[in-house]
Every structure is written in structure tokens, then in C-alpha cells.
Amino acid sequence: MTTCPLPRHPCETGAHDQIPDLGQLEGAHLLANEARSFLRGCGFSDRHILEWALCYIAEEGSGDVESFIAWIHECEGTSVH
Image 1 (tube, rainbow, N blue to C red):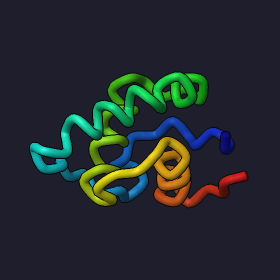
Image 2: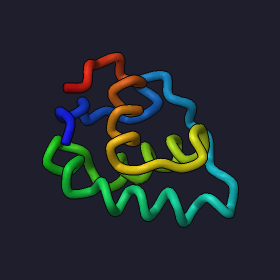
Image 3: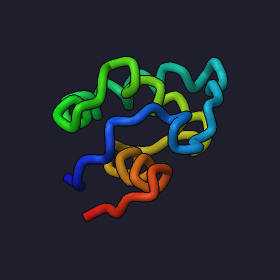
Image 4: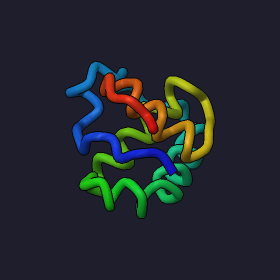
């Protein structure tokens, strides 16, 4: 797994704070659940994990946990190792 991103709110990083289409909501919730244990270990709250997942799915359409974490790093301007 990659390094921990900073536990910030998506709006603090300039990530688009948009809601995915109705058909994508389930995917955002599934992705949040899959990434939850890792991101909680990084200091993220459940609310922030879901908000990041919603932004990610709205922007990217779909993806896996690795891509999701890499995207958070990209939005935060931090490196992924």
C-alpha cells in the first residue's frame, strides 16, 4: 500500500466538491468501505473518507483503492511511495 495522505477535507485541497450521479453513489460507498481501514489508520474520519470517495467517483467515474489513495495524494500535492 502507499503512504498515508494527510487527513484533510477535500475542499481544503482544491479537489472538486461535487456529487456523483445517482448511479455512482453505490460505487463511492463501496470504495469508501474498501479504503476505510487504511485511511482511518492515517487519521481520516469516516465522514472525510466518504466525502473523498464521493469526489473521486464524481471526477474519475470508478477506480480501486490504490488509485483512490494516489488521487488523494495528487489533490494534496504530496508524493506517493
